[in-house]
Image (tube, rainbow, N blue to C red; front, side, top):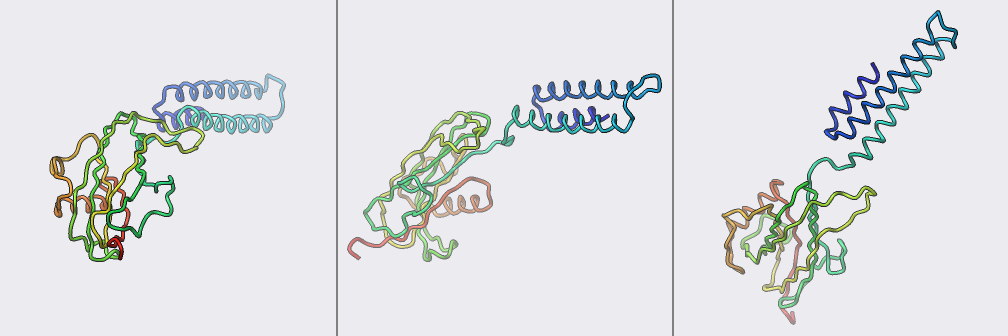
Length: 238
C-alpha cells in the first residue's frame, strides 16, 4: 500500500518518464520487502517477532520516501515554471549606486540584462522611453512620454544552473545622452516575440503620452516586465 501511494504521488507531481520509472522500481522493491517480511512472520516459519518486522517495514518505507525525493530533485531540478530574468545594472555591473543626479548633455551608462528560462526560443524587444514628471516623488505626475528606441534580441532557452549559482545570458550596454532637465524617469519595457501594433513604428524622441502612460499602467498591473530609473537632470553649469 505504501509503495502504491508513493508512485501515485510522484506520477501526479512529475511528467518526467525517468522519475516515474525509478519510482515504480522502488515501489516494486518495497512490495518485495513487505512480502518477505509477511512470510517470515507466518506461524509456519520461525522468525523474529512481528514487532521487529513492522519496524523493518517502517524503516524501509522511510528509506523509499527519501530515495524518491532525492531522485526527483536530481532528475527534475527547479524551476518547473517558465520565466524570464530582466534586470538593470550600473556601468560597473552593480545594482547599487545608480546614477540619479545627472547633467544635460552628459551620458548615463547602464547595463540591461535578459535571461531566457521560458523553455522555448524567444525574440525579446526592449522599448526605451523617457518620462518627464513634475515631481520625482509622485509617479502619477508624468506629463510627457518620449519614445527613444527598440532593441531586439533572440535568445535560446537556458536551463537554470543546478548549483544555484546565478549566470548571465545576455547583457547589453545602454547609453543615454540626457536631453533635457527636470525630473525624469527612464523606462525599459520588455515584449515577447513581437511588439504590439499600437507601439510599433514610432518616431524617436517624439512625445507619445497616451501610448507611453498606457505601458506604465500595464507594467504596474504586472501585465508586462519593465524596469525604470529615476533621473534628476540639471542644466550644464547650473
